[in-house]
Image (tube, one colour):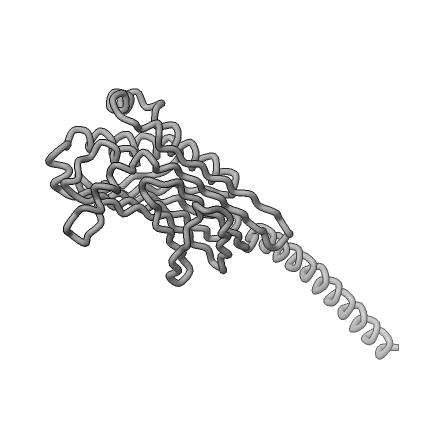
Length: 249
C-alpha cells in the first residue's frame, strides 16, 4: 500500500490481500502485488527497495516471498490460530517504519497516513469455533489518486485494491457503519473492493471446525474401543474355557 502514495498515474497497481482459513488451527495470510512495467521504469529503485523490504518483513514472521518478476511478488505467512493471525498481520503492515532501509524512502512521503488494523476474536465451542473478524484501513491519503483516476479516458482502473477471505464454511457479512463494503462472493471466497481515498470497514462472522478437538475425540474413541475389544476377547476366552472344563467333566 505504501508505494502508491508516490506514484504518478503512468501505470496500474494491483494489490490483493487475502486470508485463507483451513480450520481453527491452520491458515495463511497471502499478499499479491503486481505493478505495471512502466511504473517500474519510472521509479525502479524505489519499487525494488520497497519489494525487498516486504521480503524482509515476511521472513521475520516465518513467511515466504516469491518474486514472480521485478514488478510482481507473492507473500505467504502461515498462522495457527486467530491470535497469531492478528499479531502477524498488524506487525507486518504497521511495522514498516522499523525497516531502516525503508526509512530512507519513507521520510519524504505520507506513508504514515496509511494505516490498517485487524482484530480477530474467537469463541471455542469444543468442536466448533466462532470467529468475529474486523478489518479497518484508512486510505484517505490516496484521495488525490482517485480524483485523477476518475479523469482517465481508459476504463481500466489505476488502483485495484482487494481484500479477500476464504473459509471452509459460510461467512456472514455485517454492514455496521457507513464505511462498510459490500463483498463479492466467489465459491468459498469473499472479495471486498477497497476504496482509495476513503475509510474502509470490513466485519464478518464465520464458523470453523476445531481439528484438534476432533483429533482428541478420535483418540479417545480409539482407546475406548481398544479396551472394549480387549474386555470382550477376555470374556469370550473365559467363557470358552469354562465350557471346555464343563464338557470334560
